[in-house]
Amino acid sequence: MSTLRQRKHDEDPPPDLSDSSWDKSVDGGSGDSDDSPGEESKLVPAPPAPNKLDRFLGTYGTFSGSTFTADQGLKILQWSSWAVSYATQSRSASLSPSLRKLYNEVSMTRYVLRFYGFLQSLEGYRSGSWAGGTWDNPLIAKVAKYAMAGSMLLYYPLEHVAYAGWQMPKLARVNANKVSAISCVFWTTYIIGDFWVSCLKWNELKEKLGDLREVLAGKKRDDEKEEMNELAKEEQSIVGKIRNIKLQLLRCLLFILPAVNWSLPNWATNPLLGELPLNGLMLAEAYASVYQSLRSMCG
Image (cartoon, rainbow, N blue to C red; front, side, top):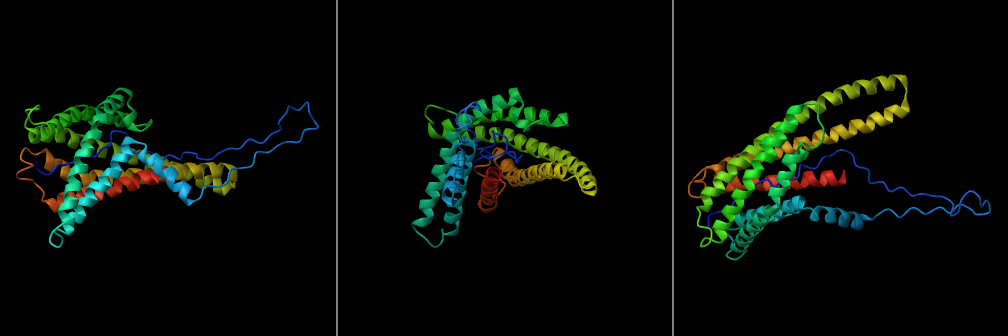
């Protein structure tokens, strides 16, 4: 079978960097009611702060427990295997072909994970959740619904047909490469929609950040410390969201040329991009996606 391709597995909306509180409150109080003045209050001791290993295990559990981020981990394995295989092909008679085989196996494994995608896309289409919250600009919700979730409703069934054609050619008598190219047209539509939505979000957040900083400057002059602290937290939240959007835009730019390449009818026999630039872009996107997710999880 020809070199397999993969797509941006972003059916779940990109992780939002809005500040989420991980603080654990500890209630301290008396064991009995106020009618028992003889009883002293029994304070529950605060749990010890987690060490580095516990924090790592907690982050790993969250990362691996989601289909979305677990696929990102597989992307790292897939494209890193290809990179080492490509770099050692002239020097190693065993390492390079072994890693090339692993790369192809992981590629097909990621096709299996896409069986979760159709219903996720349908949920996003019906609920509007792919907009990533409520925005002042109504165009954000429309593009997220129709260009992003809508395109994935067509992408996933076509991917399943292509997968069946490659894996079960006697049962699924289709031109899998051609079906795969059609599916990538809808993936390209998704990427364009994602880029568009991210730009709209960035503009809206920049305006909010500018207004907030003007208010914050006024509070500093009046020395209103309590309100300043609240506004500073809100400012940090918006800055984090903008950083997340910048990473999303970078991923879209890394994706667009491979998506166009795999959308062409002859992508398997006469590709637009060579192996090195094509898979190099995918390798860079894989690491950018994991970095984005870990920044979201760890704050």
